[in-house]
Image (cartoon, rainbow, N blue to C red; front, side):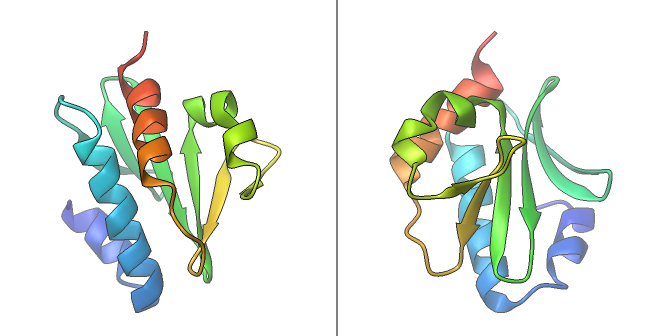
Length: 111
């Protein structure tokens, strides 16, 4: 993890940090290309070329910004989706890992 992102995430609770690391690992492991980690507008972002996934931590949840989320809106109906197409994952919610792997692949690899 980049030092900037590590410093950023350290300000959150252990639960949020663990959730963040789990989601970060899934982003990196879902694609075969190199992922560049950096802060964009002070938000943790994961890039493959000009395509990105953002993980935006809050006190009790993490927003995920990924362009392919809207393609899977029906499959994610048990999760809160913002008007901008970001999904909110709360600490106590189960993470749909296999679906997120597909979302991350489609976001970072598709033309």
